[in-house]
Image (cartoon, rainbow, N blue to C red):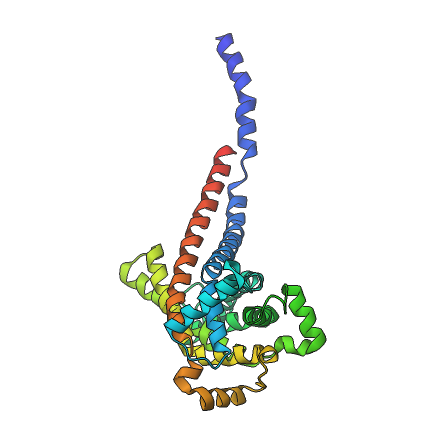
Length: 328
């Protein structure tokens, strides 16, 4: 009996020490939402970076056609990719991608974070706190999120466009583009094409978020499941991206022409003037919608890679958290 009592006394401090190392349940609940938001933010930025890197050659080719008067076709697009590879090697197909990475990661972070904030704000204004927003506030939240992200990262988009259409001899890296444009063309040039960008982002981001949120809402009502499966998210995102891109594409062409005017020898200075010149010399469909079919190809590919990467990295972080809790 004395031996059993002594054994219990030896065990008791160990059990108490184990309990003390575990965090209080209330603290874990308080910390989880902030960690969830941070994890989603990091995973989204990483997924966007991977997707953009994979489709970079197609994106670069699209920009080359957008800023020139060449007629677009699949054959001509392949010829541009092949000639770029022959002249500058394999990595020349990814020229300007470093600027894309520097831009796309903060852009995605700002856009998704601000979208959640705008949804919460508009929800409280319209009396739909914690519920799905009505159609117009749903569109407005997406537009405001896209506008916020575009305003804060626009110079990086300008730099990326310049690097995509010029040879390495002209601009060697991101900082060189910033310095040279500032010295030779003025700091204001870094914001050339800003107005058509914002005018394009408003319908693009609005329609994209609106379509995606609407499809999720309809899916939830029909299936009674709170969250769609990954392949369903992929379909919703692809559909939203295609509709949004098609609606705002002409302003994307105008933006690229104005951004690269300094290196192409053109004199695009206003939105209407640029549109008029494009339509006069190239037509409406072949000019303002040049390269749209390539967007229809790379759009679903980018969304597919983005969603898959997000799911894998998010599940990995979740497993790491579970392992950490198990160890504690």
